Amino acid sequence: MSEMTDLRQVQKRIYQMMSFEDGLFDLLLGTIFILLAIYPITREILGPEWNIVLFLGVLGLLVVGQLALRYFISLPRIGYVRPRPSPKLRLLAIFTIIMVLLTFSLLLVTLLGPGSEAAPSGTAEISTERSYTVELIVLLVLGGLFSAMGYIFGASRMYLYGWLIGLANLASVYMTHNAGWSFNIPLAVVAGLILIIGFVHLGRFLRKYPLRTQEA
Amino acid sequence: MEGKASIDPGLRNLAEVDRLVHEPARLMILMVLYTVESADFTFLVNATELTDGNLSSHLSKLEAAGYVKIEKGYAGKKPRTTLQLTEEGRRAVEAYSSTMQQVMRNLSK
Image (cartoon, rainbow over all chains, first blue to last red; front, side, top):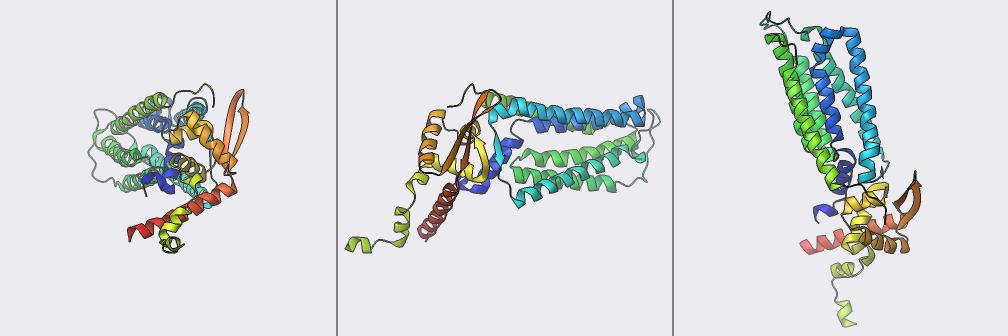
């Protein structure tokens, strides 16, 4: 039977249409990682406590903004759909939430931990003692999580995101520690790439699904 | 009579396929609705890539057969048509899938 008559493929396509086709998830992801990339700079300006307040505040605004954009821009174009409740779907939702929380916890530990503090410019120290176990775990968790998301939701670009973010995180921590970089440049580059991909998908989405004036 | 008796069981299966489900556009509609709880008209247009008129016509036939429930309502001030597969429709898709699998198995021998 052809691909279109495979119910799992149909379901995957529906998940993809609901979650990733508009590029809003990419835009949210890219912005979060931009925030994480500039975290050392804002921390230096604001201090650790206010920086966390700023980070969480902006994160909250981004999530609310994304939901609003989805409600006002995506849904009227793509249409409304209620997924069929199933134990598998619930399990998947719980698994996704746990993995996302775990990923962000690990990322915050790596980026905000004492070992990640940037050395002042001009005083870069070469250290061979620091272990990168946490960053390697983050890399594997991110790679695994995003690959699973890509497979389940049929969004192949998620495979790329997971491994790129994991590697950029490792490179950022390495460069901060060994070269005294005060700005997570590799993470910012990857975040910028994700944002560009997000904008391309959003543009394509808006062209492909124009706003419908009335239903037949 | 003699001819009927010699019909291959696989071919007989094919003759018994529900023609309402077998039509490609309707099969697409039913498969999309089978995998979700409900969807609106716009989503179904996008998922099946059928034109509004074509989709409406197929939905009317499916509704008449009792396979699809159509509810017309409003989302704010905008009209919204919500579509859902009925239990009968669900059974029809499952019966069709089982028959076609049987036919395909016989064909591949």
